[in-house]
Length: 132
Ligand SMILES: [Zn+2]
Ligand SMILES: [Zn+2]
Image 1 (cartoon, rainbow, N blue to C red):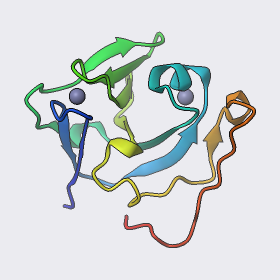
Image 2 (cartoon, rainbow, N blue to C red):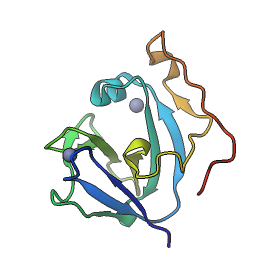
Image 3 (cartoon, rainbow, N blue to C red):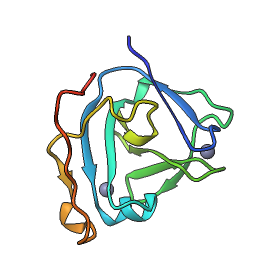
Image 4 (cartoon, rainbow, N blue to C red):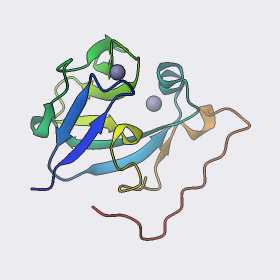
């Protein structure tokens, strides 16, 4: 099965993930903005049992951002890596932490688009660069 790699800025948190990527989408909710420092976060889900933490830090540190959601980040450099919802069999990875951030293209879903800063607009190029 195809394995994809990803990492944080400093490289202490690294992962390999297999399985089918699902629900690639953008989110501009205020929590994603504050967590990432960016106007939108691009997310993609993988089966949670397919993630392997391969860097020296092991798994990322987690911040409980809401009752059911934990957001994973690198304790050393602060990179935003993933989110895990309690009781859900998927892990959401930040698409930009992937080694090949162009390989998966966000779908039409832009969650909380109206919470994005008013100066921000997103134009996702949907030419067939997708290599699922
Ligand atoms: Zn790091
Ligand atoms: Zn969000």
